[in-house]
Image (cartoon, rainbow, N blue to C red; front, top):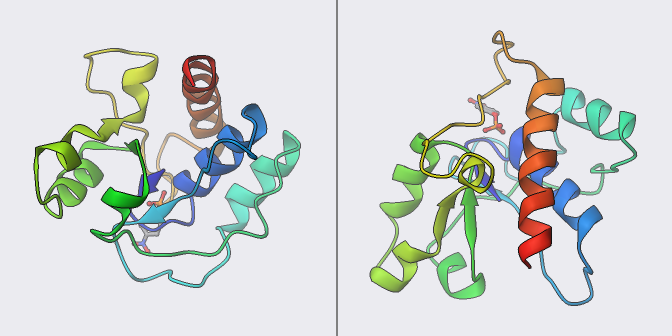
Length: 144
Ligand code: 4NP
């Protein structure tokens, strides 16, 4: 699960998907394309919305996405088109590129919808982000 800062959207996506799959068989992790929050806890607002729905993300720490992740992971879900561009810029071959998917394609196939970045307090808040990610992860979990 990849976003920009790895403190708002992708930690929630990681926590939500982990709650829906057998984590002894499926390894779920998250990262940010940016470096600013490496080692940081998730944003307090993400922690709070997770807690509201019984998803504890407090043990997560920010890390930066790296090219090595293409070999480590089978599927790389990005939260928005900007994350997608940044991740694809690190891909070294077609097999890497094929692993990258926009997470909301899971529920709105082919519609190219972004999970809005709630960090700067835009109109779409953490509750909406949580619901989008919950629906998408439900679909992902069914297929896994
Ligand atoms: P995220 O949100 O990508 O959902 O974690 C952001 C968090 C931090 C920043 C930007 C987006 N930032 O610029 O520090």
